[in-house]
Length: 351
Figure 1 (spheres, rainbow, N blue to C red):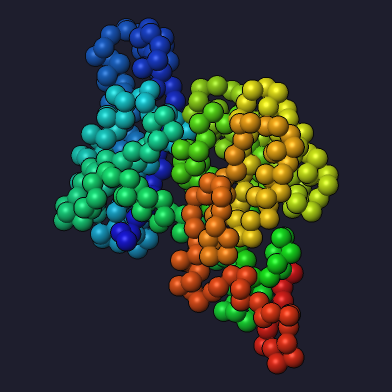
Figure 2 (cartoon, helix red, strand yellow):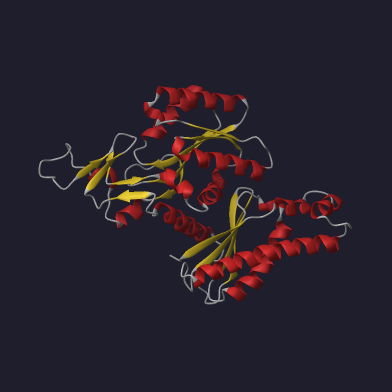
């Protein structure tokens, strides 16, 4: 797999108004006095140039500091909260500037532009000096980029806890595993919220209600709702969260049921945002509540899943089973049957 490094490009949404409103309104936004095509193009080019220079310089500094390698693929991701179908001209300006400045500052590194249109992912190869990228802009390449980024998040020492099968963790679903994923800690990682929203986009079309399965990812749900409003151009998305593991909590089950019914009454689409799927118990509980509430437009999305223990029957972003297998872990099956044996003096159980 190629080594990818992601650089997010945040865009001032005002520049995109050039492709949505009258030229006179656009010129007012930029403080320009005359509304003509030449000035409008000049303003767009300057903004694109500034964004490209900043992104290319950040990549150069990271390479000089040893954070990325000489042949690392640089992935320049355009603002995930923007539907770029309405900003094609400005996107092309950024693309042109990245080709110029990016290849000048980081000549040995391949460059890819990554963005979305109408809830679908797209990529363009901008610079590939050694023909390192052979998949062109195919879905296979986009899938590899998603896998690389999600794996980077999950392998962070603040997120993955394991002790080489010398300790077992008691999970919220009342099972024991030889590893524990503290997804809530991903919220403190740079770019996680924007990246997870971006990779979730194919599942988010029409979603108006985000419900986090636990308070630990409530910030992620709030970010999703905010970015969805920006992406759709409609300020209608809301969010809420369960205070505990709702399959075991009558209060949170009642809250989830009420949120499902409220969303259905408004004609909206409900999404249960789940941090990690392993046993499938939470998904089963959601199906029961969803059926009882008569909510027709609803779905569940897990950020991560371990398909070696339970294959999800809902959407998920990244299957970690191959990753944990390479680390010598096996999930729930690692627990000695019948509980701790007298000879297991080296084992520890962690609540």
